[in-house]
Length: 263
Image (cartoon, rainbow, N blue to C red; front, side, top):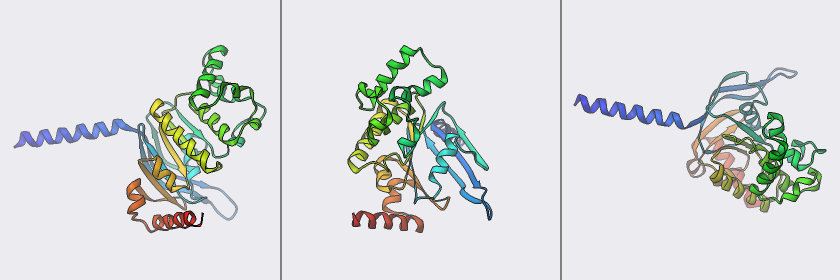
């Protein structure tokens, strides 16, 4: 009997070790406050979650809930006030909502995509040019686009360009911050399909930040709902959609349904 107990205990420890190996990002009790007149304002408060390797994880909530702040902290663009972030991969890249504000308008598309390799001094100039053409093809764009400036392409094309740039360094985690919000519904669908296709080819995890719960429902396995800087609910997207527990999640779903009905 004692031998069976020992075997079960070892089995549980092995499963725990295997789960831990699959963790790519672990966030614990992260808080960010902004200093402003009249007192500090909390951006996010005591946020905790994990993302597994290769997982698409959603962060949803209304505008101003703290979603983008969380993404920027994980990407290292902003600093947290407290809490811990453990990343068990090599590279994190972030793609932003407004593609036109995320590029130098004086740079040709080729140089925009090439920028990560230029900064890291990776490859020769010939290798960088070849890589740019490879990345353009990967995101469904013609090689001739490399000679244009950002203002000479559409918003959807430029968002693909920025996706190509973010994948130049083969990130383990991609943070997609409302990347379909400024696009029309047809281009939104194309971007979603492209992300899922790239996921199969490149095996990266993606943290999808969005106020669009239906989009997260289609794209992600698990998600977290943020309201006023705090996590109000986290879990499987099927459960969040069909059987939400938190009142804030239920209200958020009702708002989504009303907007969909009005449209």
